[in-house]
Amino acid sequence: MTTSHFHDATNTDNRIRPEALSSVSETMLMTLYMHALESRRPDALIRDPYAERLVGQIDYDFSHFKIDDDDQAGACVRLRQFDRFVRTFLDVHPDGVVVHIGCGLDTRFDRVDNGQVMWYDLDMPPVIELRRQLLAETARYTMIASSALDLAWLDLVRTQNNRPFFFVAEGVFMYFTNAEMQRLVLALHERFPGAELVFDVCSPLIVGIQNLKLKLMKADFRMRWSLHHYDALEQWAPGIRLLEPWYYVDIQESIPRLQRIKTLFRLFPPLGKGMVLLHYVLDSPT
Ligand SMILES: C[S@@+](CC[C@H](N)C(=O)[O-])C[C@H]1O[C@@H](n2cnc3c(N)ncnc32)[C@H](O)[C@@H]1O
Image (tube, rainbow, N blue to C red; front, side):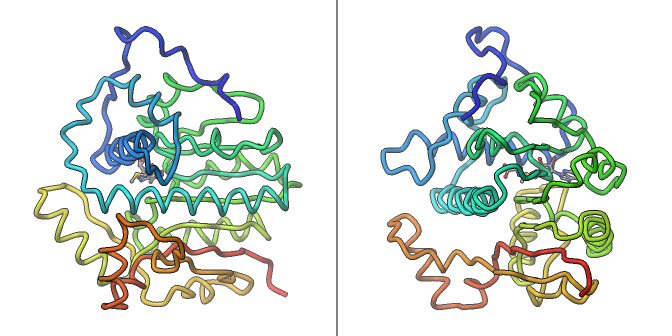
């Protein structure tokens, strides 16, 4: 566990104010807050002391987020599952390279650090500017201020090319168009053959429901990418393969707070299968 790259948080008069964030980027404050709230619960699904620490350091009225218990539990099992994917990769490739696309203020590096991984956190420039005030780079931890869609960033991580790569994007790709996704995935496939990619995506039905909610909330952004068939990326280039889908309904353990939503998902399978984490490998064509 690495804590040394957190800037000093002892002076609460110097809390940091987020500036110039887009509405999409502001959603990262909500996930951060959910992770912090969850950590304090006696029945916490995740422990994320770093999220608690960052919430304390940021000058923002987090209380205006009306957080639903189900949504918080859902966000936390999602985080937990993403962490598991990364840990499994690092168990096999302890000195691998992880690129966290659209990292927001998530501190996955600190949660999963094995002392060897080379880690890149990438997000839009205003987000990284905020991150830099909270966290410092180290020899194994680098921040990249760039849109994921401006592919010049690929050159910044290519120096590690002899090490296996893992790209992870949580709560991000649904804001891109299909054409943007195709361009990004094909570039990763071409430049990092053999890399693994894990991300979450929804069916068109769920995206429709989410966009209705965003409209009612008068949000100025919408979800744009959805998949009818979760193996669809395999058609984009030979060698791209879906390794496994992970569904919320697959959770075996009993989580009382998720029971209501799990029952709904079981009764209406299109809802249950409408939200998924996908684990792909971007192999060269055989
Ligand atoms: C819902 S937040 C998720 C943040 C983080 N992954 C988490 O789970 O807490 C969406 C994130 O995607 C980032 N994002 C949106 N468009 C992006 C782009 N074109 N390139 C990089 N990041 C982007 C936002 O700035 C924001 O941090």
